[in-house]
Length: 387
Image (cartoon, rainbow, N blue to C red; front, side):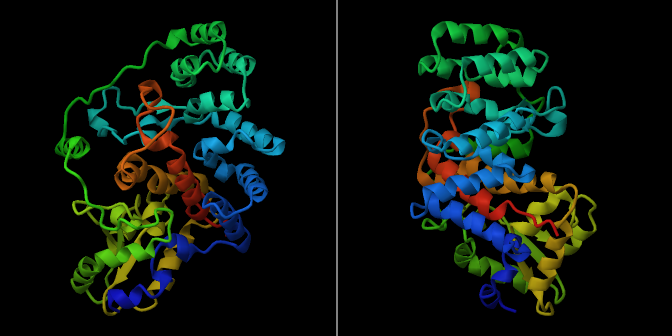
């Protein structure tokens, strides 16, 4: 089937669409999206987000909610938000996931590990400003976690912005600083060697050459299928080279709307994925490949949508769904989009965290436009059915 005909059938596109949301989950996503796009009901938005935050697999939505929405939220939402925030204090993320994505190869890491952060702690200035937290709550958290260096350092990253913005009394900040003094300043790690892949990444990051978007009018929150038009010629060339029964899955920033002429297409051969224990359907490490890609088949492939749905169903109801959901989160909200796609598309970012390098403030993570977009994507696509 030619590409142009396949595009008429949305079931052959993103696995998130193939998987199919329940009517209830669809309504939740629609309520969140409508409000963030400026034509929804505020009361319904807060009620819906509260419902999602109470579900263990969706509590990480808190990390992306627009910070401007916190101040005037109703009491029940504030209570749910704070309960979830306390739960997330136990979660350690790879720090670079929320910044530039500058993670070294395993054998290039000085201690063999990724730097970790408790990212919800970096939201502390806004929680103080909106009066979700105060000095006494922060002091109690620090006193109860004196052995948790990652948590202490994550809070310590926020002291300067809290002091500069006058969010606590000076003597209170000094006392909190004393409770985190033992972790010292954050050490800036350097790789043991610089690979060719890293050299390319550094060149792209430091390039001053303007990048031309392939789809400047794309909707980054989806649906993604309109973005395929600009790739039609390449996709037809790929399809023309397939064996009759061969299937490939195609992903990358160009499908998601913020690709440029130099952006690569990620092409995965289904047979190769199936033969790889780490990448076969059902592996949480590969969920983004099955859910966030365009499926193309050779001339002898029929019912491609059914094949895609079958592979997506390998994730339904699994006990490791939470791990798979985090991988979807990373692919849709962090990798490419946060690290460079958002700034590339909008020409930069804006937030009160700019200049505060301790908390990785020089990136779109704290920009409310990015956070609204990320919340939309999370509500619509970071989803795996129970059954």
